[in-house]
Length: 169
Image (cartoon, rainbow, N blue to C red; front, top):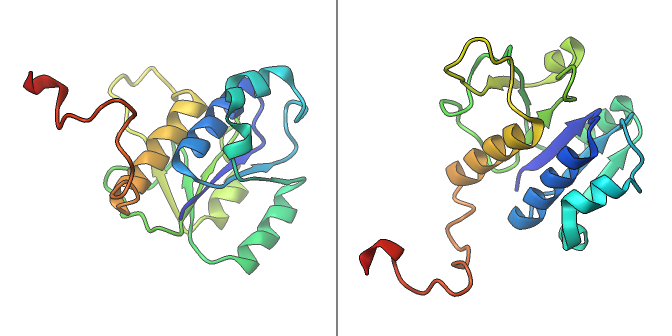
């Protein structure tokens, strides 16, 4: 199972939305400080709605503390950055990858990117758009990793949808 890592997130609703995505996909979430908000922030809780009990999350006060996790856990560090080596859609994910995303304002630092085993970017057609929203980027990267590693193979269908296709009627 992959892990999703937010390094120095600054905006509570983004982190709450990402936590909700992690709850839906049963993906562990790692928050690496310093954070731009308090963990008790009402906007963080509001964005995550009532899904927080379904999130397996870990808080690491510093990047150094988080690096210690790497020594005790297997898997590659995959840094998402506008300076990535290849498109995330061309990259071959593994089920134990750690997907790292930086803050909304700074992204991942050069030092953190150097620690990554691989770096990927999300392609965009409009060159004047610098980046996507953090929660959108995290969802794109995570769902591509889950798709490639067949994590959805045994997922239940949405409640109430028992037909093979809603377009068949």
